Image 1 (cartoon, protein in one colour):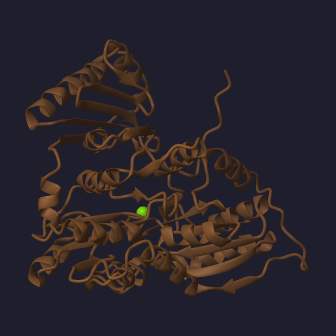
Image 2 (tube, helix red, strand yellow):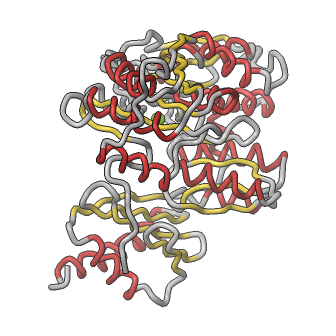
Image 3 (cartoon, protein in one colour):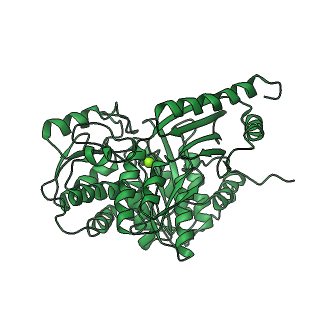
Length: 457
Ligand code: MG
């Protein structure tokens, strides 16, 4: 059987790499030219705050303009802000960003006219054009025109603010850490316009990320936590480098694990509406527990926010009610707003949750059922052989193969997946308590170790 073509350059979140070696202006020009050859009309582009952003954005625009697309440069803005603008009024778009990666990285994310990231099939065609260099370069009288429209980000801010009752945030103090990224332009403004008093740390755009790295880790957010505690803020919020994800610290400055963040938002939404929650197989079963106790259902997808977004759209197409989508990493998708992860919207939703419940964030999170998760990875070049052996060994279990192998035993589950980009296996095990998680993990770990020792692996 002929193997289906797979993506070679793009991962689940676009092309990413170290600037100067993996990501060069030449490559980004080719991405622009390939995309411009496949699409026509008005293409919106933007970037995060990385120092390499300007160079790469020029290269991208050159490719798009040369193939006849009209380019609207939206400047520095969060990825979800660009996706929102594209959904509203453009024929497609591209964002220069490396999301949560360190400052030396950058990349490109291609967006379709509905605001979702380009799917696998189209991406494979785009890559083929890049490898073959089949670009529809236009003559002098057919090249595109560029316009600058950095003010358009206001429409994104408006669209979020108007989803909530006016002044819902009155009396709420929020500390915001946009991590020197593009949300410096949006999240503090959104929350202020909801009536909150807003304090910021790392609130000035700076592509060297002087305060903390773009990945919002508990360690990196020490300054945010300190600000929350010293100011008496209701909570703190931080974004990753392109603000499609939001993470929170409670009023005591404690980091809220992202699956619990998702579950808290799910609880709020599921008490108001009945329908489906869409999430990858790697998300805590806490979300399913919350959903089913509120007469909602969970639909699981492969790991990757694009699969969540596309599944949400497919369900809605089938006239099903979709309440919420999201991942256990602080990336939440709100179907009333748009079909991509949106950090600014998540921040606004958290304000509404605190306002409606009139309770501390710590007590809201504490009221959720407990779960205990172990995440581990094993370096191996024989991932596919091990996966086959595991499947055989676990045949009698309740197995799901949506992405890798998921074994479910009541409220406990384990997921083993081969990484698509690195030679390793990822393992996640979760139960309601530490002892059960430990036992289940040791069992899976034992099977993998056995497989690693055997001749086949
Ligand atoms: Mg991101």
